[in-house]
Length: 410
Image (cartoon, rainbow, N blue to C red; front, top):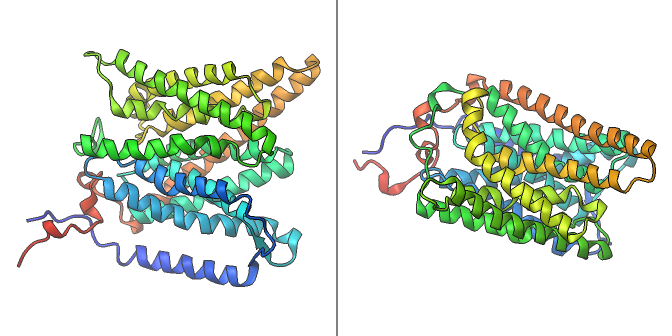
């Protein structure tokens, strides 16, 4: 007989989902139109980002042995809702200047999917410890925060489009970390009995990670001119190639028996792409991109090995998918690498000091926004009305998904 799991979400999830979709439909009726003269030149980039968000991020988090349905299925739910919500928030921010319906273009869809990617990154921190209602509410808060942060950076600090978008890794990671810290429960320490992986689920997870690995050069080259794209794609590829080799080497060195841990490898192979993304406007030389990939691979892999358990013990913060090590730390590394490269090319000390203050202000502004909103979101999700999971039902698909072969026969 199958065990009795979490109470039905019938009174929570469907009403919230239908309410949100109704609001979105009505909003699109009055405020959104299609740009019929829009060029399709951006469609290839849209396809790449689309695959990354809905296949890469979804499958990369399926490593838990009893949480595969939830990892992939809830990623689809969150990303699909986040894309619509991002368009709504973006339209509301620009509505006072437009005074009429906004034109939906391929570029605006790409920005919406980038916002969705940020929310899926944040979701990876709390995966397995939350229900789909939690994740929907969390994605609404995260996407709104990221979009507003992007708008404020461009409006107040005059940050270039690419720079503000590449903060998505940092924003999503620290938003998720602070939400998880607020929601921390003692029942999953030091390690939940179901928080483990096996060969089949690790293979599915590697499949998703490789999709991200292959399409990341296209992701980093978004919104660059045709000439600049070549440099960005080559630098990103070299950085990720180095981080992949480095991750495998560090995994072997850290294992007492000298063997490779698949989860450690998955944490490190994306780090080069995340870190080098923030340096692209300086167009680093190939060796610089490779050095960034080496440093990011070392920091990310060691972070997944040592920082994740340390965070749980010292800071009472559980990070399911090692999001801080995969996205947060490499993102900050890349941001400071760009600072150092810009300082090295500065013509005077005054210009260098001004740029350093400006660059660090952007980072601190983003961190303050993500940390504050993450804490607020965590407190909202702690309300019992959302029916939080019991400790023994964490990291288990049977809490929410139907398995016919396990159904009780009468």
